[in-house]
Image (cartoon, rainbow, N blue to C red; front, top):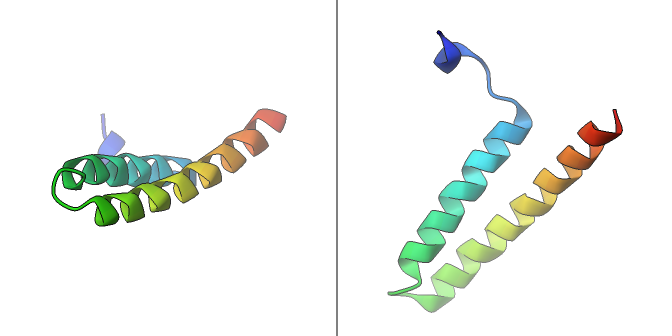
Length: 60
C-alpha cells in the first residue's frame, strides 16, 4: 500500500540509474554519438556493480 514510502535497496537504486542512463543514451544517439557513448559507458559500469551485488545475494 505504501510502497513509495519504503527505502529502496542499493540494487534497486542501481537498476533505476542504469535504466535511466540507457534510455538517455538511446535518445542522444541520434544527435550526439560521443555523448551517447559516454552515457553507455557509465551504464555499463553500473551494470557491473549490479552483477556484483546480485552475485553476493545469490551466495547467501
